[in-house]
Image (cartoon, rainbow, N blue to C red; front, side, top):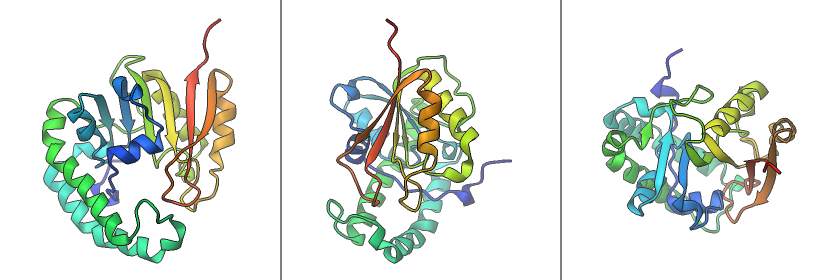
Length: 229
């Protein structure tokens, strides 16, 4: 089935949020990073401006700048209305109001749109949908990131998550997944199943982050290959 733009709700986060969500240190930012499902985040552009190596993968990169810009305009008011109706599910400390949230998200997506066409030419935005095979060899990246997708959308099923994370681990030496809750802010039912599966061949660790906007979304799963003795 073809991927449809009408099913996309673009919502972009910035580099400061990425650093907090994924506990990215200055040393981490010197490594080769892959972002899966980055969508219209400004992380790639802002990282590139700092001389960092980030490649973003997302099926929405099959669309043109004009199509993505139009879709953002279509869903903007709908998303903000939903945020207003569910404001009690969020922590309003760093982002203090709905107006500030809208400004932050639209700023991030604006940075992305300004960079999108050049980023595609540079190979920084790659059209790809997990769990399909990434068109790159094993160990192409040091760190792979997944924000607000894997483990959150439990309806995709256990097999989907295992195959998606396995493909990330094929091309990335380490994988970081944030957050560890579902769309209703409950602990994702996938967490323990996924950890049990990958703990057979990998080291897995859950870490508390300094980032929490959605209530309950403040933990990060890190999966590393086990060191050979």
